[in-house]
Image 1 (cartoon, rainbow, N blue to C red):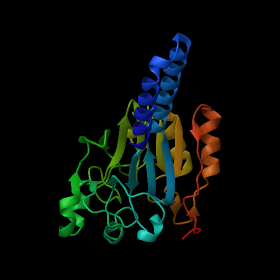
Image 2 (spheres, rainbow, N blue to C red):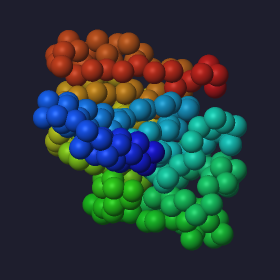
Image 3 (cartoon, rainbow, N blue to C red):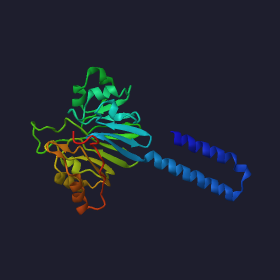
Amino acid sequence: MKQLIMLVVLGTILTSCKNETGPRDAELEKGTVAKAAEKVEKERDSIEIIPISHATSVIKWGDVVIYTDPTGGAEAFRGKEKPDFILITDIHGDHMDAKTLKALEAGNTKIIVPQAVKDALPQDMHSQLVVLNNGQSQEFMGIDIEAIPMYNLPEDPESRHIKGRGNGYVLEKNNTRIYIAGDTEDIPEMRDLKNIDIALIPMNLPYTMDVEQAADGVLAFAPKKVYPYHYRGQDGLADVEKFKELVNAKNKKIEVVLLNWYPGGNN
């Protein structure tokens, strides 16, 4: 919004000087306004992925701030902008934490959740919740949000992540698409994704998948950028460097971005 106001002010100043300039100056003024407009448009569509820990992140998409699976208490978000909305993928404690949600003091900020998460959160939080189940979508702050499946393979009613309970999310704005996988393996719904610009992909046994399976899944839908996240398992941290090697050995066009999702170490 501040950028838009600056652009309007710039245009007003240049327009007020119109009668004092010649044709060449007028062309220069038009070029200045066009460049300023282009800069504002780029900043409005810029995307920054900020790791907090494990499955928890802050996504800044232009002027919109999104929290994913917030955990770690308010201190984990110290210095971060308040969220415009929050996404929660599943009911497990590394994704859904009512204490953190309350500690954030986010007021009436909407929290997008699957039905299972709503059922697990305290009643006094329900007014903030917007339920999206697999296959449903809704727009928030100019961003289309689609809930898609996340689950373990083979499908089994006794598995840690059963199909239909949790959500992966595909966010889209101005033909740019972000995929937040949640706790999943390389399911058909992942492999069939199209035109993904940024993907957050888990890799931690025995909860999701190993790096080989994750790499194979990513190669199937070929996002422009992939961020390994949620990679702490029973035996420590997954080898994300190996994941990067596996992906780029078969597709050098995919940019693998390695961030520090465990600033406090493997705990």
